[in-house]
Length: 579
Image (cartoon, rainbow, N blue to C red; front, side, top):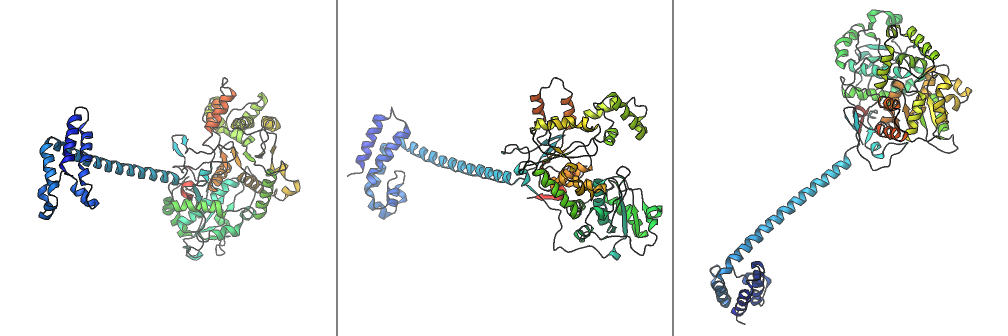
């Protein structure tokens, strides 16, 4: 067939339909028609080369021109007859090229966005659970888990791990005893937990000055009235052995120092001008020269005499190592605490979770707070006399105390009463059957003050009710031993609730965070609660909602150890690592 015939037919169809069809559709028909004459080509490549009407005759060699003479004539006749369509063909090629470039650009863009999205998802999955403070508000990551009364979210417990433990197999950089810069000695004052903090600080100070630490003496406290030695409460062998690669520690004053009483009484052997929260550099500049000169020096007082932000991070990590790993109670204390915790879990005949409540409402705490509480006239008069006797400078004539009490309550600086604790716990959703271990001294007001709490939660017990008299008698010799039992039972509880500040609650919350953040440690917002308690128009549903929302992030969740915030309550930044 002559190749001009299909082209003549296409021309006829185009002229008949040009008024009703678009140029692109006409071009499609022309491309389809012009390809008919090329279907007899022997290979796909030749068909592609020969079927295009845009290939110039001059681009073919002589042999090709001979073989395709009819085709060339057809191409020339096409352009001669349809010269008006050549611009459309060229435009279509340009549009096709431009579309390809746009498609490639869109493809690259989609790949880029997908890569960024995947990277963001992976990063989000690998980002540890961490709450961040915005002023006084703590913002925590959202989780898909349903809220639990007894546990923090799982993602909060799998993001961080303790990393202050001793490195087994590491090389020790501690010099022999006779090659250190001298000996330091401290009195650990106060109650059990204040003494614990002092011991941790003493080890850190010895490390800072490269000095040998003499085993601290637990000084008799005026309130506790208890004389306990270090070895009566703590495992001395474990303490010294665990820290052998960090600090040189000896059990007693060296034999060559004969006048031991001088160490306790002589001002020449005592450093007394150490400020509170002193930086590490203070010890290097002011204490170390005296230690080198005298060879043995006592540091007192030693309550809170080492800062947090102004010491090297490895020193803060060492303090955690002492607190969480080196300072262990005697085995008999640990065993008795395990027994009490097991009895708490099995009080209903089966394994059940239990709550530990640290109730700070002793007469001394109530008096020292200078807050106002619900009481009879006789009780208030008696408390006023007690405060006037114990703290005469603060009491003065008593006329300013009412305004002071209101201000302190608004600021959340007053201990929670047992009845207030009961209302908060019930608003959080804890049922009447909740098993509660109470760690406290003698509650001011006795059973009458405890009645609202006991009525709402009748399953309240103390160590005296869990253990027999014979079991506890062996620990009564030292008041600190009984305090250690309370400490350990609270530490092992599923939920710990504090009612007022203090070293006991601070150390419990910090230890439970260091153990993995799984166990809830509830720290009531006493300032906000005081406003709710004082609102006579607030209904129970609104109050319960306020309590739940307020305390969602106050359960011992992971948060950074922010500046000027001691590491005993929140050891995350210096003492924990990403899991």
